[in-house]
Length: 99
Image (cartoon, rainbow, N blue to C red; front, top):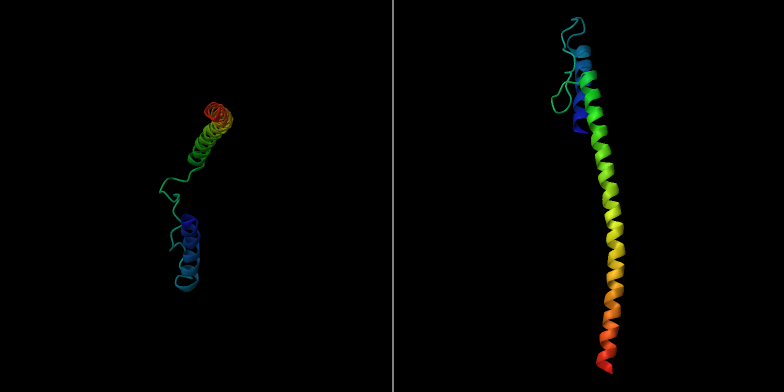
């Protein structure tokens, strides 16, 4: 969010400067820099490349989340079965000791 404020403030500063200091001087204030918050060029082709990369990464992350959900479901099922088996074993041993 800080980088949004940085670019927003740049435009505000430039507007304020034009109104207060350089009203009659055209072109005295440079335009806001054409870089993003990491200093990379903000060209259309560069942004499109980043969007494509982000979509690819998002797809990979979604697949991994689905894998983890499946693994979690399997682990829950196995844990439930393990608990049931342990309960049966404890009951069997308790019955053997009592008899």
